[in-house]
Length: 408
Ligand SMILES: NC(=O)c1ccc[n+]([C@@H]2O[C@H](COP(=O)([O-])OP(=O)(O)OC[C@H]3O[C@@H](n4cnc5c(N)ncnc54)[C@H](OP(=O)(O)O)[C@@H]3O)[C@@H](O)[C@H]2O)c1
Image (tube, rainbow, N blue to C red):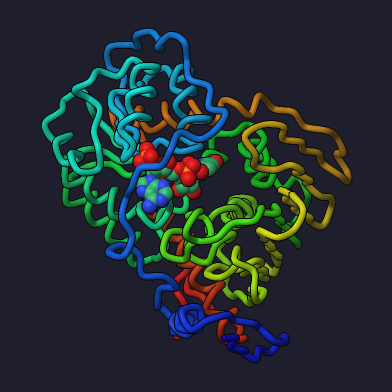
């Protein structure tokens, strides 16, 4: 059954009672859109099509290299991160954790991971006594991040957790607390902070290369093929929250923050779910939000799982604009300045972002250097995501404290 919520900006269509309940929850300041954990379990999946496994395992690293246990052998772990460990100077694959024994065997053999360092979700707790493992890299569906991060801390390991950190700010706070209790470090794998174009963009904006910032525009979208929650976690509310915002729009959210150097003081938003489309039975198709910063700059962020692919970020100031298109992918970044100092900017190979974040975390573990993307950053972002959903549900502008929490 369709429920309709009348907002200031028009009709927000909400399909089904679960979504209506979630929106009602989100409308309450401080409430989580999704309560994760409990209902969802880690289970194995088949080896994705087209994965290229190495013919020979990587060579040995320096003596103080940090050993990682990779939890969840899905598309991102297998296609992007596992091969990039070979490029890291101070990080290596020490162990694997998977719910699919056959995949675990094939991937373990390819990466030279000893039998005794291959774990299932059921045997995971035994990593506590495995000294080969310094850190756990959580690459599971987003709704499982909190549970497995806390389990890793309980086993006495440091944690690198994929984005989004979790599906609620309450879970983020639990993860941070677990790390503190264990005396272990937590980093969120926001790879753009290690990518040369985005690093240079941060430096240019800090030097006022476009004058005073006035407008930020971010668009992150792609069109998802036919699917349903039972076959794809990305469209399951329990595992993906509201959908495109947590998964892809979070790159635009991050860019709006690291380019402006400010936190928004207010957010207004809208979200849409079409009726009768199994892809959007549980999640939103599009989420759009408008932010106002204390400086007077504004940001517009849109994200969608149902429109042709784009990944752009524009920052427009009083004297010019910084155009990033594509902005935050695995490769192929393009960036230019318009205005008084117009030029194309190619500061380096985006590929370094993957190994760069691994070495950065290894340095933090071994040398105590500060973490550029700590758990507190993930928590901040979840607060903003909750504010976006709260505004979309109520139709009202949400006012924010400097730490991103919603003002009553
Ligand atoms: N930073 C980035 O650029 C980037 C890009 C893509 C994804 N990610 C993040 O990485 C994480 C994983 O994404 P992905 O694209 O790799 O997903 P995926 O291909 O669907 O893989 C997820 C893996 O998690 C494990 N898993 C455990 N319980 C599961 C369950 N109930 N449902 C589905 N899978 C389950 C499975 O591994 P086993 O079979 O080994 O148990 C599965 O293969 C997400 O948090 C995502 O946001 C980040």
